[in-house]
Image (cartoon, rainbow, N blue to C red; front, side):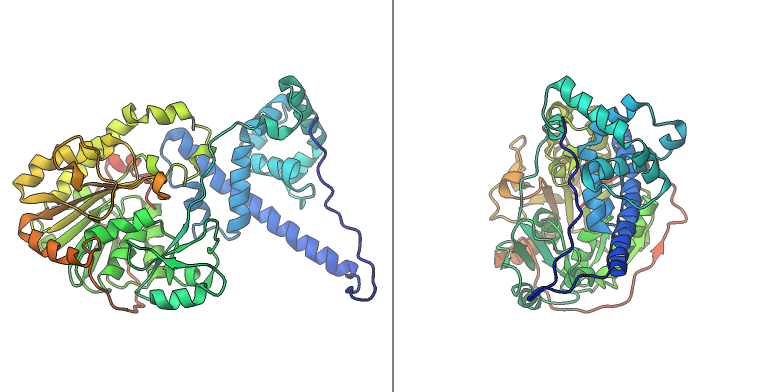
Length: 506
């Protein structure tokens, strides 16, 4: 039989020496009411996120990870919402079975089923009291029936507690908290001075302006983060922009830019000089991209709500593009744990094991070959980075190998980003040793990076590599305040690849 919910009531403290006087009833009531109101709205924010997560999971067109959806600007109570979404997903199978066995989920409530799931979790397994809303009243009315259904489930499966009914899904191995210092607004030294007062912080030994803090460090509400002076960005994700290393003053394209962390990293590497065209096909994700650009303070980024594939590489407007960052739609298999995909209904070990042969992977790799070939066609491009957050050979080495004949005919060759990095590409073709992989075994996400350099520019690349970095350039501090505008190509049409642009970028 499942244990009864904990009584969260507290006896009033006795007055006396060393004790504060008893809190007035009115003040206690106001405090409780405020907490219940916060919980009321957190449940509704969690339901909105849960709806997007479940619909995206069912259609295989996720609009973002659980974390990215929760930590979007539209969610106010992020911590409570995140906890509710994760816990509701964890108990979702049980909640569905309880609601089905009691037969109370009528068509009226079916339209709000995500809010019913969140509220049922919160009342049955979280907090017992809840502010009076229609859904809360509905759950409270049937709470005894739900508890009886839980008891029957436990008895039928011969377990002692509800927790024993939970599926044994994979857990997330704690990883260090990585921070990228936004050198458009501050310096690494200044950030370290602030953080070392309350946290253990060290500089990363490979990525410039990257700081490393202990696992579990929560800085989402820290002023450095909210002011855009640091970005909570993984190390592998930051390696992508550093591998490209565009020079200050260059014209650059970020072909699939949202949510924009890599885009604004490029701006910082360029000291805010030159220009970046940041393309994003999906309208909602383009808004997120614009928000990231504003937060960074970069004023050399133009956000474009349009399809990179529709840009004419021979258009004189793009004749001076010198570098392209291409991080297209991918399976996200390298960050599935970070994305908390193990909480999704569709997740299973078997599905992950044979994912490389699925129709979805084949469609993605076909798109990746197409967009990489297009990126190589820009006549003045000297440097091009192709990256994914996938672990599948079909999306990584196979894509690069398939375009190598075209790249060679256009004067490109593979270069070696981060030559000191030990984990390289799978040895499936000559030259794969130039490719770079990161892996959870390295306490990182699973990323893949390929760097194409036009042969005429290869000597310059070698000079940049002499500092022992990743073909990086030295940077100075640059503060900018003007925000970039969001425009759309009037000549662009949304292609059928819109379905594939439910992207997994960090």
